[in-house]
Every structure is written in structure tokens, then in C-alpha cells.
Length: 451
Ligand code: BGC
Image (cartoon, rainbow, N blue to C red):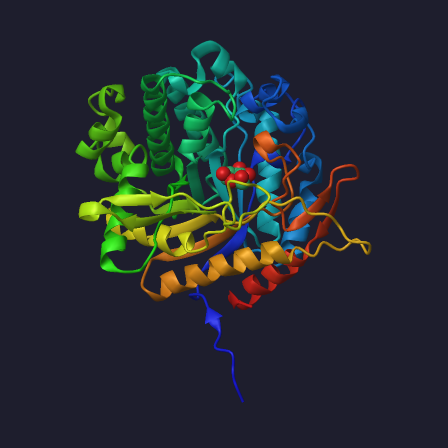
């Protein structure tokens, strides 16, 4: 009789779902919410697929009770949500909008009543448009000041019930893609010097997020950044390729992780960034490198690396036939889930990693019976979890996993074309239908093992 050995996770492992305000809430102009850069971006021709806007999205603002009930029914014990800055400060700064505070109070209380622990991201890309108009957004240090006040405000308002905070989501995406290649809001293509300065401001905002939690978070409050550093996978798991992958990892991610974990712009940063390096003030790195409690990783895909001449890392181009999701950037490189946590633990001494996002985006279609048989998503997530399980087995300190995403939602510049949810959303009726992957993941959470 052959027995299946259970691929179990540690006892206190945190399982949950992740989502973000602008992608699900809708109600973009209700209850005094100010416009965000993502309300404006889709109006620029050619920027967003089909010109899709987040104005209605999943209408979660009005349907949050049913959504949280469904989440609880699927067995989630944790939910990573984000607060919309322009709902709290319609103009980015100035007077607080009490209706914005009320909404998140209701949402947080609903989660807690259902036994779901909220993990709150302070900033998931929906910068108040007013800050872009007045200051040029993250290009200007005054946006950091506005963020500091915003962070203080929300930690003071929700910190009695929220104990897990994430400062920023994916600095690379909202800085590089927002100001260098222009594929995300606010959609600029600016010189490297300006972009590196914007990176610096984002790092400062992260520092303020940590400071705000330490000052106002109360007992048991924990805080970390969520980063989407590019995972580097050694082609062979042999010392030469592993060393090359480590070097490639540091170099590729030098703008975010190095300053936070090494307390400054290192020689590697200066070598890569050269004359375009960011300017900084005397005490900036004290704030930027404040100790955190965990590092959030959004891990979807990765690059393959081998040791070239003299051990120099060579990043390999993926051939056309390499499998990918319908979101074409998402090559199915599940070993990223082993190597990314391991690299941050080994290189930067991170003591607690939380996978704050992982998943896959497809153009799912219900079958004749109305079921969504997303075996493709279930398979990819399962492969990723096996790699994560292996990492934990090898001693990498991983403490949680959040699946992106609970339900289909506004996928930024891809509009509503790409679906990342394990719950299908019919945007015409707002009917939610759990896909096959939701039923599978529900069992994973329940049994604390890969099923
Ligand atoms: C972001 C999410 C996004 C997901 C899939 C991450 O980069 O944090 O907002 O929807 O990836 O693209």
C-alpha cells in the first residue's frame, strides 16, 4: 500500500487572499473620494486596454459584506487589503474624509467578525491625482510629507484592530513603470535621474510607514514592505550557478533592497546607477533602513541565470515556447518561489518572509454548466507551493502565503481582460462564482498542506 506523504506547512503558517482598493472597490467618486492617478490614466488614449477604468470594478465598496462572507466560507483566515489614499485624503493632504475612515472601519470590523485577520497595505498605487498635479507625484519630496501624514492618520484610525501593516506595494511598478517606461499611471517616460529620485522618495515613504506603525501601532503591531524583486533562478543548483544567481539578484534589485537592508546607496548601486544616482539628505537612510518585522514578496515569475566567464552572471532569454499565463509577462517559472525567499534570507538576512502575492492571470471563460475549470491556475499555484514547501524544508523563514487574487479584478493597464481571481466575477451582474482553483485552495488552507 503506497501512502501519500503530506506536504504540510508549519503550524502557524498564515494563509490568505490578497486584493487592492483600486482594483476591486469601484465607487471611484462616491462619498467624497478624490480622483487617483488610476482614475485619470485610462482616459489617456492607448494606455489601458479598451480604456477600461476602475470606476465600478467589482463594486466591492457596496458588496464588501458578501465578499468577506464568501472569503470566510472558503476558509481564509487572513486577507491582505489596501487603503485608498484619496478616500482618506481626497486631495492627498488637507482635511480627512470621515466617510473614507468609516468605510475601512466597516470593512475591518466585518473581517474580524468573520475571523479574518486584516493585513493592510498603505499604498497600492492609487496616488491622489492632486499630488501628481501639484507636485509631480513621487518626483517631489512633498509627496513623501503627504504620505507621512496619511500613514500616521490610518495607523491611528485602524491600529487598535490592524496589527499587520505593509507600507508600499512594489516600488518598481509604481516608480519604474509609472515614470520611466510609462506603462502604468501616471504614464511618464522621464530621464533616469528623475526616476532614481522618485525611487528615493518611495524609499522615504516606506520609512515613514514603518515609523508610523512604531509610533502609533500599539502592542503587537508588525510592519514590512512588499517588494517584487526579480527572482533569479540558477539554471543548475550547483555552487557556480547559485553564486551567479545571487550576484544577479543583488544587481537587478539594487534600487530597493540594498538601501533598505544595507542602510545606504552601496558601491554596487553607484556602479549601476552612475551619474544618475538619487540625491539624499543627511538622515534619510536612518528612516529608510528602520528595522522591519517581515519582508513581503510578490512572486509570480523569475529569470534563469547561469555562471558565464569568470562566474559572471548570464541571464538567459526565455525561448518562445517557454510556458506562460495569458498575462504574457508571467512566465511559469515556479522555482522563483524557492529562490526568491532564499536569496533575501541569505543575502540580506531577512528573518521572516511573507509571500504577499502569487497567482496567475488568464482569460477564463465559464463552461456550458457555468463552472470555471481553471486547472491551469490550480496547476501553476500548486507548482509554486511545492517550491515554497521545499524552501521552508531547507530552513528558509517563510511565514505566510497570500493568493492573488480573491476575485477577478481591474488588472491595471490590462483592464478587465486578464483575470487573476480564484473567484470568477461577472462584471455585468457582479455575480461571484468560485472557480475550481478556489475550491482546491480552500482545501489547502483548511488542511495546511498541498492537496
Ligand atoms: C500587483 C497587483 C497585480 C498583480 C498581477 C502585482 O504586480 O501588486 O496589483 O494585479 O501583480 O499583475
